[in-house]
Length: 227
Image 1 (cartoon, one colour):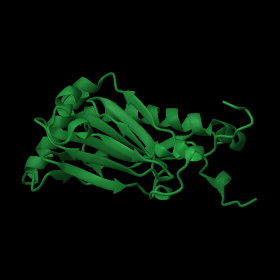
Image 2 (image 1 turned 120 degrees about the vertical axis):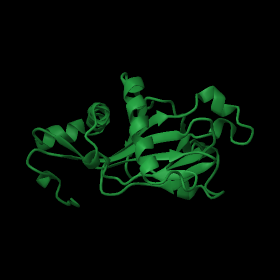
Image 3 (image 1 turned 180 degrees about the horizontal axis):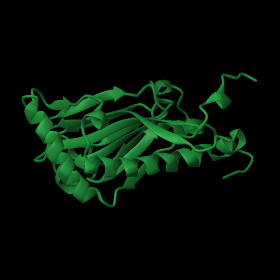
């Protein structure tokens, strides 16, 4: 890249596999279906739990998973914030999960475009889903079957206008993550995303979370400032 060109406002997305995912996923599947049955089963093509999952269940599988979640959130947050953290002298940083929930979907169930509030980082962990090759054979959904799609910050500028060869880089307005069991995706909470329609033999089961990171003495160093 030309060193005179500044690439500003990056959008970091971490995609990482949990090495203990196979064992953890089996326990999570059991736990989540147990709740689904207690709630009377699926009433449509998507079931969403309450977002107090960590308060309601004391599960070794959840504890193991969120140990991995914590290290992964810090990994991407440090990559983006390390110079600022050093300048502010934040001390020991702490991650707070302010919401965790699971979703089960099938039979063309989907979650429309949205983002998350009251947090700096969000994530999705794939607990159960059909293998990639099998999903892509779907006669209607094909390669889009059950993927997670992220949308560019410039999406609202792309309504058929503002396009010439000078800004062709804006044509990449989406980024698709192909779900696989045991894979975690961490992304900025403000980033628009969507769970595309899914249809398969296995239910698509994911665990999502919202997280904040705070300094040891609070966030006083980040008072609103327009200088």
